[in-house]
Length: 169
Image (cartoon, rainbow, N blue to C red; front, side):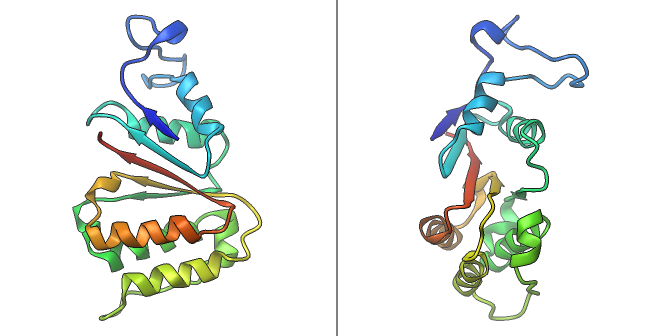
């Protein structure tokens, strides 16, 4: 599923945006949050820079009560290195309730290959019985090798692992 982010529309829109009381100025996009909650295995949130993709995903994780089941990775330019990215993914998954029991710790080492890390992660998550959401913000920053490794994870991951990716169009 693809969720496009832009100015608020429809019955929620008042001057283009709605902020709930106590939300600290955060725009409530209930229709988008509902779509994220009903999402399939893979959801791509797409919108121009500054459109609220990150805020939408963080709001969804909080409002849906997924804080202990969502692994958050912000992909920056430094994540073009596959080892660094995958160590971030492993660390984020280990912070989730189900992942803490399944994902084995791993430390950086020369020659540690991103493909080997992805394969190991697949083996660690094979017995996953609960749901975990892997949220990758700015997925467009990943290098081509890392994107291919992520594709492998998406294709072979257990059914309980769900993906939410944020990227510009």
